Amino acid sequence: MSDVDMDGLVGTGIYNLQYDHELPEYHAPRVDRPWCNLIVIDNDKSRNRMTQIASLPYSFHRELYVRWKHDSVWSDWVKIATATKPAVYDLPLAAGYSGSGYRCEYYKTQDGIVHLNFCIQRMNAVPFEPFAVFATLPEGYRPKSRLPICAIGDGINSGNGVLGAEVYIYEDGTITVFHVNANVSWILGSASFPAA
Image 1 (cartoon, rainbow, N blue to C red):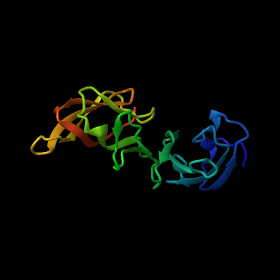
Image 2 (image 1 turned 135 degrees about the horizontal axis):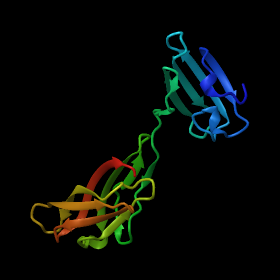
Image 3 (image 1 turned 60 degrees about the vertical axis):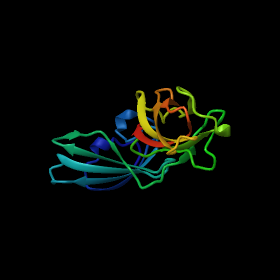
């Protein structure tokens, strides 16, 4: 079927839809996708309570959406998360810092939660300096506001070898050591937060 308003598809069935124009009045899940497979379910035979499930098989991400009709009013489309693994990226470290064989990484899940893991060393075992920026997250992977995280520092000649370190992730993506013992040359930690 071509150029059909999805609000008007109320008969239970499976439809293959094509859109010649990117127009919002078709009430499709995404106006930038010209193809859609649609499952329509009449929940109570009155056509006042319905479910529509849309599959966008030709889109780059192969997306699924669902929406509901209650008392003749359609809800907004809701994207259904799939079991797709997120892309994992190496954390871009500032000059003078290294992971020294440990994986420093970040990724974002489908629900917009960013996960960050790091184990950072100053080159040549030089201790960290307070307020030093050791990495930067790219746009789309940053917190809405400054985020403090607790990290562990590994000390040089500190006796017990494990010290606390305070790390901040800022809105511009910079990651800094805020408070740290003077003997710390390694910092390791992790954080999870909603992307801005």
